[in-house]
Length: 390
View 1 (tube, rainbow, N blue to C red):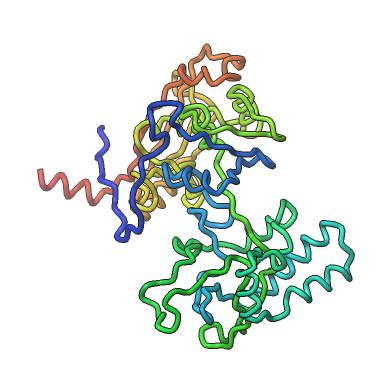
View 2: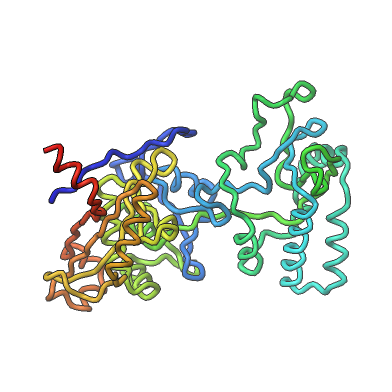
């Protein structure tokens, strides 16, 4: 029985232009080579220019502080304040940043008294004239404000607390529709200052200008499949471990050691990428699947397919990566249909004579076969209606 193709559903509001996916040049010397770090079993891109290009040209990865696009901002509310354009945060949020800054200072070996004095100095109100003086003197506005850029000891707390998915939060340009009669050309002094307001008066309360106690730096986190695809299939990324670049073989073996099913998951990922889909793994956990398939990218279309990856042999036998009962499969099919997607089982077929030694190299990918099966729920009333029409 042939599956019925359903056209992808376009999003009603598209706020960005589509960019050609990587790589954009057929000439190797004209391609930009990106760099990533393997840190704590995660592949992170730290260079701001690399982050934007990798994400925009193919929608690879996600921001460590954002749900998708790496555009985290300390606040989703920005205002003009005496000629400056500044983020507005609540008193509770500011105190939370102070606690993170205190944890970071303690991790650097400072005693409790020194930490308290530093945080007290940071939390004092600042005059606008002081900000202008620092800007005129060429000083970094956040030099005294952000006590540190969080490393691994502080960053996990920031990740848990930040779930903003605003596409324009990090854009310091004022909204053209906002009231800017008094300050037609406000200046954004940078991430070193914020306007703090009482929790109960966020919209109308008195603003206090203070220094930002902690500067949160957002990186781009790539899945293992995305990172290896950029390294192996596109050749535009190098992954470093302890400041040393990893070869393709080293990276393959490292990723296999981190995830036993990496061979099958990457084979499926490369299969769908080569057919023009944008596979995303992060959103799949919401619907109980391994991948979500998008046309062009998440900003333009809703996901069309929910994909479950299974490893089988030539006779379609083998211990499933995710053993299904009829009940669990029916439940997953029902959930997928309720969110206007189709359930796809992606079988990665391993030849019977494929040895473990061959799996230790990406050359084994040429021996794997991918087969797709669309699972749809049988509805008896719909079947009767179709029979009556005939």
